[in-house]
Length: 340
Length: 239
Image (cartoon, rainbow over all chains, first blue to last red; front, side, top):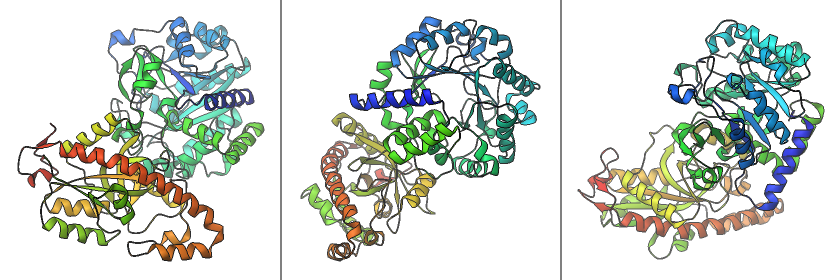
């Protein structure tokens, strides 16, 4: 699976506990969006179209810590908006790490080098840098020249300071498999990132450019090509082998929307990180009052082309835990530091 | 009040549903049999009820699928009259049992292997797969009658069917399957599992179908009941 052993053990223990308690639905990763404000306007983003007063609203550190305590997920992914625009981000991260949450601080890295001195390296903290391609493609996707170079420089700086760094790549219609392959090899060989995450873009109706999204059969073909490249053995993904199989159409999966609940500035977002049917004030309400069976591939038209990790990685993790063979496969990946 | 006819492909499904259900035949025979029944009139809605194979990997044996739409290769998707579908959905929700509203895929032969089911799932996104629903609904639409479909999962998406069942069609008799099964001791466990799953599926079917039937009956037909089956302009409203 490639994720750190400490995190793998903590998540396994958490899952075992949920099973013993007989909990049917429980969160694995809290998607924390302390702000929607961003310093970019990426072609495939559906998060930044809120009105100005909402873009001006930020969650306080206390609200972030309370959200983490309220839902209890072992992993917190801080997204947005651009988290580093938040003036108290370092404080938020420190508080979550102090609560022994495995924090993924997602960023486009424009402000990362400036922020690094305020962050403290920890086995609980991973800086996750958005990288959609090599220079030309990445800068086109984020609609600004120079962002790729800035991100590369920031990753080197973060590694030099002892931070664990991963990358998050969204694959769009414009992403050629060879380009994505070249990026992964560059990230592993040149930048020495600790792991990579990859996901197909979700076709947000609000995204500025609708032509960037792949349909499900195209996604499967694209991922088959990417993940069968000779360099693949060197790439280290922070994913379960099952999720990577799923992206290649080898594994049937249904979405586990409740696995990655989203807490944003307007409350707990229903039903998932990508779709928005309003907000509820508490996590309990989100879990208990949402009609979860209404959502998912084959059940809701909006889910037809979604293969995003925020919906399916939780399914893959649960399936890995339920199958001794898959558990061994993922365990070997973790121990060897490679995707199986 | 809507007059509902419950049809089930196999006799064992009809038996599980009680005396109101008609065993219409399985596979390709079913459509002709239903057409003959509908020629006699006397119903506003056909409720197609039976078991199915699972494609949605989250559905366990016994899971209930309310047909949101029907799919088959190279044919247009068909959807139920919204007022009936909504009434059924609400009734199942109120009854508190677990169910999903999903598409149903109709094929000519069972999808036996896990890999083929994964392909079918990726291609169609249907919750379950069977061998009659699309053809039956098509007959109903042609006859100007509305339809609803309820299927319950027997074999889960991750399961592979025993060899004898992969070639099953409406004409295969149970004794032939039993003889074949006896000849293959390595598949006895798979048959035993399937038999248990069938019990669960039939039990869920017997619970869900009367709920849907009652909900459909309660829908008030405000126009010509035959015209009400038009997919484009449903002339019905929920009471």
